[in-house]
Structure formats: C-alpha cells, structure tokens
Length: 80
Image (tube, rainbow, N blue to C red):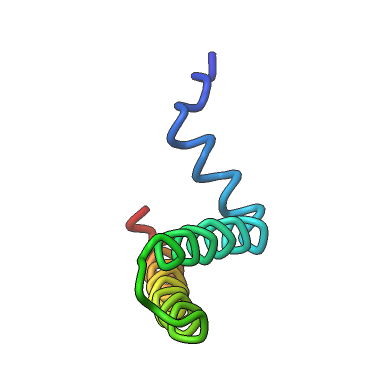
C-alpha cells in the first residue's frame, strides 16, 4: 500500500504547482503588513510612510525570489 503524503509534502506540492499564486499572496501580505505598520507610526508624512512601505516590500520580494530560486536549485539537484 502506498502511504498517504504528509502534510508538509502536500503543502510543498501545492506551492510547486501554484508558484505565482504563492508569490502573490506573500507579496500582498508583506505590502499590507508594511503599510499597516508604517501607518501606525505617528509624526511621519504620508509620502515618507509610503516610501518606507515600498522599501520593506522590495526587501521582502527579493527575499522571496531568492528563496524560491534556492528551493528550485535544490529541487533540480534532488536534495529536496
């Protein structure tokens, strides 16, 4: 009998099949969290809040893309 896939394996398979949706959800949660945090800071102009939110978003985006590329390399090498 074949074993049922574990929960982590099921999540990994879903992420591999839905890469764009995964990155989009991470992007949306990152930018909304960044904007929410910056809006809670008093004594800052609106333009500065938006600029700070964009910087945090870009950091998160580059981190996500780098992580995805590392995982893809590991997947192709058979490490994962």
